[in-house]
Length: 263
Ligand SMILES: C[S@@+](CC[C@H](N)C(=O)[O-])C[C@H]1O[C@@H](n2cnc3c(N)ncnc32)[C@H](O)[C@@H]1O
Image (cartoon, rainbow, N blue to C red; front, side):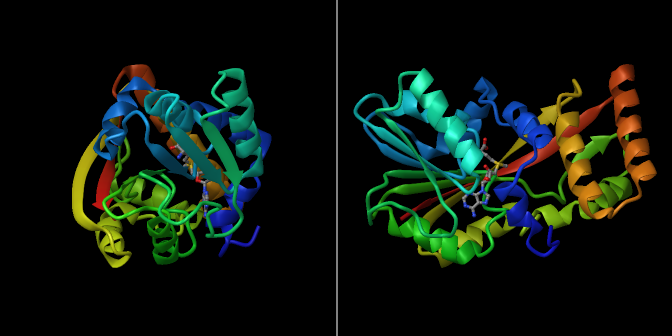
């Protein structure tokens, strides 16, 4: 793959090992509730889940908007879209959930048709953040909310790694993101796209069980793609993290920036 397009291309084509990992990583969990609370989702709303992945969040939103509401999921990956449609059918929610495969920044949605936009861990990958936000603004009427949830990869803690090692590891995976420090950029970007009343909150993801080693393994796959660290170095670091889990000393902290604006 072309390293300069990898941040987007690695979502267009996902090998089966990564797909399985993503199914686990993106499963909806009750503790995610706090991440989407500022979007104020209510029954009867029409919601866009931008970058809907395997569809777990969209399914949760489908339950919240009820039979009188509708959820549109859009994603760059055709396999995710197919899986999401299947999931909605199986859950008997196909009448209130539509999934669209998109290949560029244009959304297959009418002007002013969306009450709520949620972008969860997606905007760090888009090739042109301003253009994407303007397109999202187009589909919302005055007063509607956009809620973005995103990481900022310079704020990670992985114990037992030193801050320098954390920087080395996540820096070596930076090609997987268009903007690895998206969290801090979102407020200004929303303002620029015409959103107002911007609210910013930070909610940490904290793990002491070792569950988030799957995220480290995913980063390691990005690093291996272009060998931005030697294979032995990656294995040694993942080994250290594993040993810390065994000793009960592992700690992973990743702040999520929650940025909400009014159209
Ligand atoms: C980290 S995943 C997050 C999935 C989901 N929002 C969640 O939190 O469970 C990022 C998702 O954004 C999608 N994506 C990346 N770039 C995109 C783009 N330009 N347009 C639409 N979807 C995109 C990917 O295919 C992937 O499903």
